[in-house]
Length: 236
Ligand code: BV8
Image 1: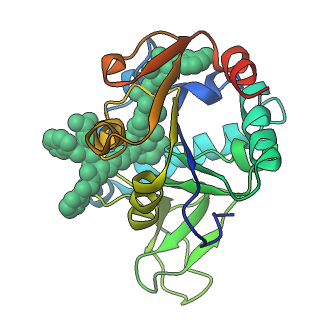
Image 2: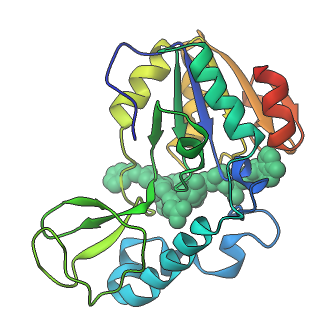
Image 3: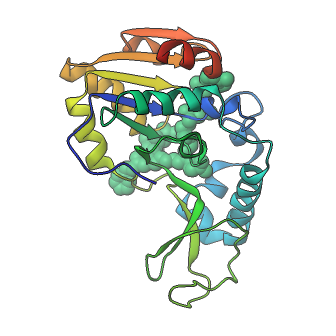
């Protein structure tokens, strides 16, 4: 579910893999993280998919199966952000780089998943986006157009344009508070949001992370510790 189109909200929250770490999902760049297990060039680029679509599907099939494990549930940080949205209706926009659905499962409704969604698939032939909770492979035909070999994970790979950028920048341009939670701030354009806000000079910017990120000095303030502890402490 994505945010309804309306006037820009005053609070913008950006989340990254760190917020889902306390739910049992790996981050990308922490010790032992996903990019130490597989080469991102192989599994998260259009070239990698062209070279070996079966390998890329297998990578996302495994992550989809992990997300379906009953042990993987939203944690106290996801729930706190859902409460914040309920307490301030229409005033919170949650922009997530995560492709898991833990924010939505916690009850957040105004969510823009800028790097796509693991539980969806897209057809390169007819552009249909479909809910997808099982495995996919190059042999599977698109349920909408019937063409085989055209389905791909509905995720944004390196070199591709992230989703909903117009709505995200419209919200950033009007916001008064920006929270960045559990992201290393290494992947653009999300990594550039805080500098964009510093240039505008209107929003208070706060980093919540396990430890200061490389870009911590770009923020007005920082609070550090596990997201499942720090986020509820800030929100409640
Ligand atoms: C684009 C797919 C424009 C989904 C992902 C030079 C050369 C080539 C390209 C570039 C370049 N410079 C810039 C680029 C662009 C590139 C980029 O930024 N590259 C970087 C690496 C330099 N960006 C792009 O290509 C983007 N598109 O720019 O389009 C364009 C213009 C014209 C034409 C075409 C395009 C697209 C980027 C999308 C990448 N997709 N993955 C998936 O499989 O999941 S990247 C991946 O990184 C995930 O999506 C992830 O969300 C994202 C960000 O990572 P984080 O979430 O921050 O995770 P990370 O592991 O890094 O950090 C975890 C953090 O959590 C840490 O800070 C840690 O301290 C903290 N933490 C840990 N535990 C906890 C915690 N915090 C709290 N509590 C805890 N318990």
